[in-house]
Length: 86
Image 1 (cartoon, rainbow, N blue to C red):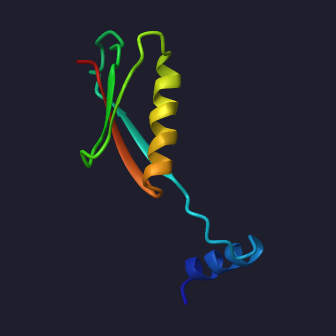
Image 2: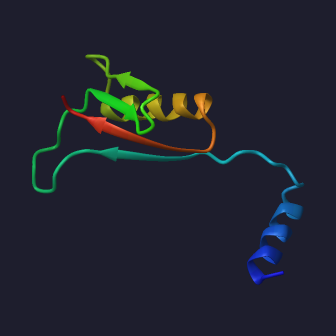
């Protein structure tokens, strides 16, 4: 057993052995360095299964949070989201 395996087992034992899924979300804004900050209106799941459209009065952070929260409910685990400015 490697040192890493030993450490993971110790952490699992300390946490009570729960097997909760950890959600990891990579949100990729598609702007270019040196360009003005784009106004993102659409976020797509990189697997092509889900799309979110921004409401006219929705703040960017709220838009990103909404898409991130919804993808966690739809597919726990790892998700890659791509923001577009159309």
